[in-house]
Length: 337
Image (cartoon, rainbow, N blue to C red):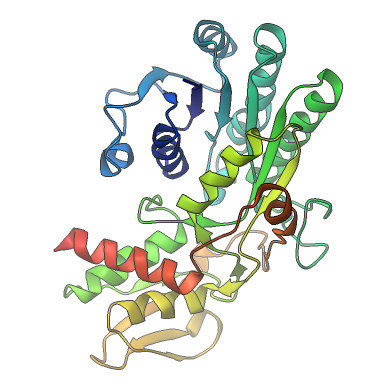
């Protein structure tokens, strides 16, 4: 029986990865920050909360990381924990740098010192591309991050590469483009959209207030992406891989797909901050725009090239963005029923 440790196990990706590894016969352990009551709702939704072993864990605490790794003797270590919301990183840039950047180095140096056989996965991100230098973005595209979150993630990515090349560690980075699900955090734009639309479908009069509708993202299903994480650690040689669908969609179109899944017919009118959407079936306004939801430095276009992962790992995304938006909207609608 293989033994794995997942930081951020109570998040969206951690929950899906836990479920996947348990199905593979792993003994699954995971780290949670010290709070009065661990947020295990995602593990509960997937029915695996009683099958995983939870430990207090903090990426800022070197001694804590040392003890977890020393006592665990893990075959695989997945670092999914982070200050994960891009918007908040402008309010907490030092925290983002410490957790998303230096925290990775703390794990790697501990593994190098006391558990060099452990295979390591680092959750890199398409936000590292930022002001994109190439379309689509691949493993060799130059990074140009546009947020403290993205900058810190670039450090985490490169320190992983450095430890792999310097100490012959099996350390891989997954450069994952946006991946969503019904378990996505409520602060993320896709879930913000589907939850608000579900409430409107149940009778609410409050429209969804958004920022830049023209931003384009490459959206896939999180349940697919955790399979790619695992596949990276099964390779003979560690490497970096882009996981993406290879298609890009505006936030406006994501709204349309989610609304249509709830039998709404959005009609768009106006431009810029004056743009709105009205449900043609009811006349109810469902979308408004506010400047406060625009980023200080916008990431306008992300679209990944997953060809390397497809060829080397046999990995493909199985859910397109229309299916994804429908899945999330219907799940939020059902949760309110």
